[in-house]
Length: 303
Image: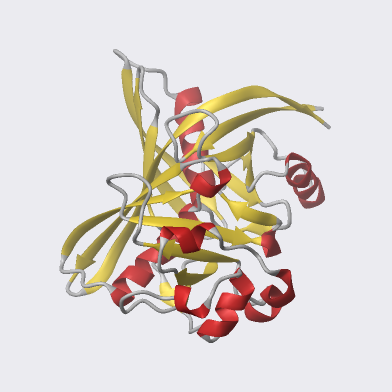
């Protein structure tokens, strides 16, 4: 048995940057154990398995696996899979094409707008299926610093303090003072498990306002050893929750607010995530995630 498999680099317009993604098509006949085994073999942050949708009006149903477990939702698999399906199913007309790809995920239906232009990296964006909710504070600053290999004074800036936020997945959001500090952060196994228990968070998202690239709003890193992902080059699902952090600590008047997040630089895989927050009546109304993706490999996987 052979299945088509494609890889893409997501949240980048350049091959060998961004976050690698594998997409396996027509995976309907595979068991959950087979899906997990393939994801573990490929050893990417996430692998997507495309199956027939429950509603025939939708584009597909997808299942998302890290090397360690299945996820109800993730950002770079949503962007990458939608772009791949648009390329495969919607040929360019006069060098361009716009498409709406509707993906059924465990979290619910996700509509993705895809823009294809000849000679340009495809771009896609989607509205988050669930708005972020604050789900509690984290450990004291000295414990956070110990788990991340930092000094306590390097945790926090302005009015930003560490926060736990859920939006389908739950992340610990830890503000870090400077680029130099965030660059030296690491998973300190001696203190990690006690500070970030597996049953409380899916990953730890570090962020600072200091940036490497002009035009970026925040610089981020994300560690998720509990998912089998030592570090992630770009994390769309965490960017959704980050909207809740910004709502909590920054002044956001009604209207649209565009924030560009750079990630993956410490891994040699620079990534760009476009986060748009729409405030209405003083409340967060919409969270939108956008980014580019480029195809890298097309082939088959034998079972």
